[in-house]
Length: 324
Image (cartoon, rainbow, N blue to C red; front, side, top):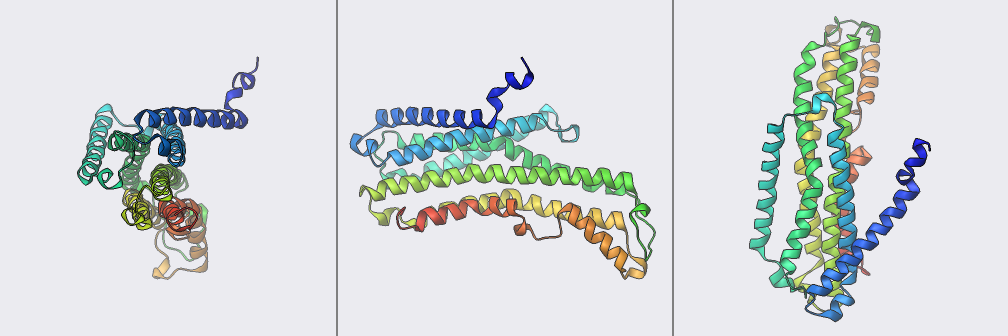
């Protein structure tokens, strides 16, 4: 039996079928849980099923995102690896952060206003938030690691020898091996930033989807006065998570771009007499294009999609008439 035959379950078709089956199983389990906690069986069996479906999808997606994050952490190259003390300290910091969020939500006590007809609705909400936080944990760790790698690479730029100022700068005049190694490391960090931003965007977008689905169930069924749960609440929820993503990722993106520009400056040196010639400008343009810093942050599709997706999803679910 060949290796390919033994790994048939990793094919796209098997993955798709398996994902659908898992979603259905989780939906069945969540349906059983909500029925067991139901304070109004008719509502739970009817309008709330849309929210149950959204939560089931979120749990499956969060599990997949968490699994990919753990695999990504295990496959990190040597420069990214840290000692156990680092992991313990950052795990404690993340746990404190999640605990603070849960504490703030407990003080807010929004369930007293929404009156979801489920016994223990507040506890169920906290469990879902905790699941989302667990899914995000490995990606947050990689964001922190990427910050450190940016500082490490920035500190190593001194190993690159800048060329003597000249009007006719050519690639052969540059410190090739040192520039190539630093460029690979820099692009590796950018790849990690994109993956982290996309994964975190998926996690928070699922949370926004759950909130929107709950509003649709409560308001659409007439169980709740729309004034108590207006579309603006969902929009603010999405804006909040978009802000969280910006706080987590944007400083890293800006630090990385500063590193990339510093690498270009160090690698090419200063133009002769401080005035760049055509050859110097052309070489700098090609280098910046290779490092992907020849465009603004939001013109990069993955970055823009990741940072703005929670807000965009909130806009759709809050203001499309058939949904709101």
